[in-house]
Image (cartoon, rainbow, N blue to C red; front, side, top):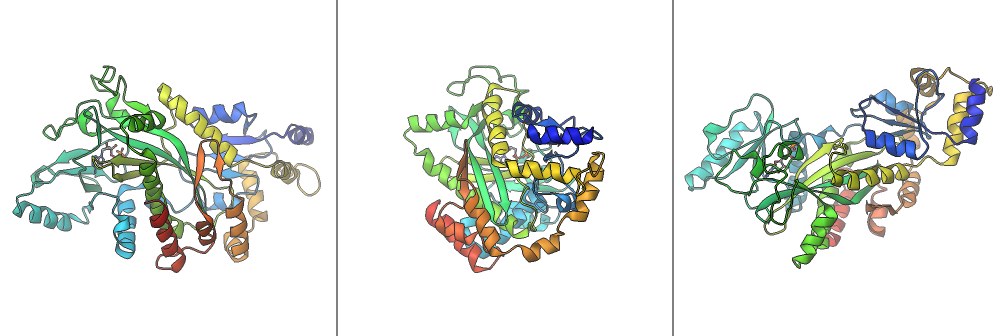
Amino acid sequence: MAAAACREDVQERRLYYVMAETGPQVVKDVLESKGWLPYVEGKSLYWNLWWKGSRYRKSDYEACQPWQRLNHFPKTLNLTRKDTLYRLLKTMRGIYGPIYDFVPLTFSLPNDYVRFVRVYAEEDEQGVKGLWICKPADLSRGRGIFLFRDLHELTYDCNVIVQRYISNPMLISGYKFDIRCYVVVRSYNPLVVYLNQEGIARFATSVYTTTELSNVYAHLTNTSINKFSPSLSHEKDEVGSGCRWTLGKLRTWFEGMGVDFEKIWRKIQGIILLTLLPVAVEVPLVPAGCFELYGFDIMLDENLRPHLLEVNFGPALSLDTDVDVEIKKPLIEDIINLVEISDEQARMAVNHALGISGRPATRGSRSQLVALDKKRFTSLPELTRTNSLMKQKARSNRAQRNVGRLRRIMPFNDTTAELVCHPLAVGKPALKQIIQEIRRTLL
Ligand code: ADP
């Protein structure tokens, strides 16, 4: 029966995905609309995409086959925790200079408490009462965040970051907003990055003021906070009802104001790439099937200068509003197209499940398959040895330029296409040259 299933799998080019019950519905819907089937333990003979909300184990990467895709990379925690992200960018600032000044001054507490107090006291002596924002290092959706001016208001019972508050944000009709940018890393070695040309502008729902620091509806732009605002459904001047615009709508608004949004967008691309570079240095070589979607949160100040607020691991994919549907469904479609399984790979999956003798090698349990895969998988150290510059070059050259709304932003020209194929290391010439190219072309 299993052999028959395999024949049908080949004939109908069946692809299977693994996802928890609680996995994002939009991903399931997109996959199923493209003919993918859910992997059923004990029934399906192989799987092609494992979409996971949490991180994988090292052994999962080791077992990943050419016909399989995993939606995360290892060793990227530093990117998506607020405190470690800042540490990473601070190191880069120390080496590469002010090009890395796109995050507000940040202190990681309790470690940096003394440093923070020193800066606070210096400003206090000069009569400056700056505004600060305190954020738990490892929470999201605006949870646990508060603003303060006086040191005695600072209390915390977990690791937090204290960050200089951007007190002069760009406003639309008096409302603060930030931009959620969707970034897909297709590979870290060589670095291949796509930026979705659509995104979401997320608005605060109370008019911005620096006098009411405890009004979260004026200061935080998280939808998870503003959906409880009494004025959410009010028609708010230009912003309208609700608290979300598509990036397209924001672009049109800027154009109407005579602002060159493309110039801002190029700078945002620069920030995204500069942020990913130190991560690319840390990510080990992994199978080509890995990819990852990140949510970069960017805020513009009144001078239209973009600042990076944070990078989200597994950005929300729920379809709560029309804006979500308009942005997230095509985004997932494009990602699935980007990480496409070729006909050849689909056949390989079936052959693998059948085993050398032509009979099914396993009864189809994923754990059994993984165990089997492990035996055949070229181990990571071996992969490291055999992975030549030539192979990397081929991968970077093969990377498609655009897939739907996903635009490739790295490599972005011939020079960077060449440079990303070199092993990247902090302080080494290739990384320095990439940063110079970003400065020359995007900033
Ligand atoms: P979370 O992961 O909880 O969403 P963020 O760092 O994204 O944490 O902050 C939540 C919101 O707080 C942002 O969307 C933004 O509106 C506001 N915010 C965060 N940091 C700053 C800052 N330094 N200056 C001004 N506003 C900020």
